[in-house]
Image (cartoon, rainbow, N blue to C red; front, side, top):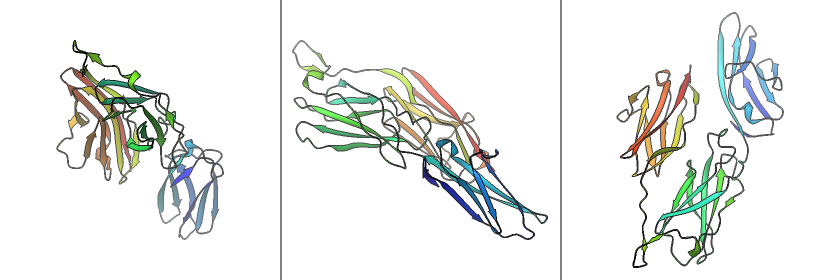
Length: 288
């Protein structure tokens, strides 16, 4: 269940039991916050959050217990809002025809696991905005086919399930912006930049109920392009078919269709190239 912050949340659970059970609710295994109301009637229990906040996100569990036995049911609630825009954009060219577009993350990135970025571009020739990158979890993008003699502009949006932020606008990129070295002939020369791996966006901590899906992602950089390996408790996951891993332009992702308790532990990403190594880690907790 996904709700916009500020809206009310109502979770209605119907039940059958004889004799009538005692009903309790918890959030992530802890007592409910004081602003959350519970309304119990015969055969139904209702959880009400009058004005939801981001901190109300979590797993809510209803437990029914009588002299015969007990039962429980989980409901995932995620409270979010339209994200705040990303920070200032910087443009840099290190190879002819390519411009690196980088930006400060949206302030909401730390509290919204589902936030990603969209990049739009237009040039002085077409003057039409077009989306050139979507679902970016990193805070940089390499624009290709940048032509001398044109001016370019970029916009970066933050996006989540609720919607799109206002854009962050780049400075103008054009003839006067080029930062190229020149040979004795005066012709532009590509500049090769070699650097060790670094972690641009680290992994985040995950807690999921048994049987739920899990999606982990981080972003790495380096030149030459680093080789990336995933580990669980220091065991290489490369040949484990329970995990689906991708690496697209430095965005390293891992997907687990249905988590199980044995997948609880420390997950680590290690990026290696000829100049060094970088790594980041997190923890996945699977709740029974």
